[in-house]
Length: 116
Image 1 (cartoon, one colour):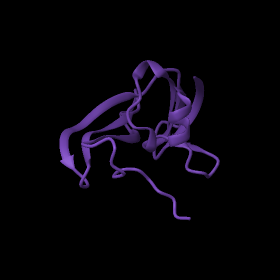
Image 2 (cartoon, rainbow, N blue to C red):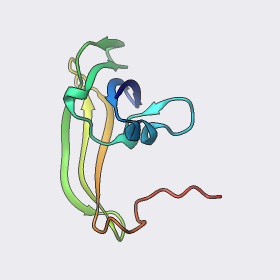
Image 3 (tube, helix red, strand yellow):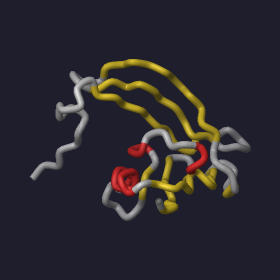
Image 4 (cartoon, rainbow, N blue to C red):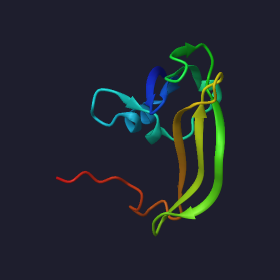
């Protein structure tokens, strides 16, 4: 695992990511993004930067569970949890996460398919 900087709408998080998580976070623009990774374990995050405070903190952000749901978003995809990473100091939102689950793991629903 390697440490990476993950961009969010209100700042960034420095976290250890697996190779698979780093691939998810890479949207092809030269930066890694927080949203596609989903929920990170608190012990994997080492720092966060808040745009509101204009400061980097040597601690992980707080994780705020916004909603624990079982909302069906497509035929085979269920939104299980929605939450936010928030600043330790001002509680401003650094980024959001979603946790999805497939009913049928063999189905293609929920898999991005780039057009060729």
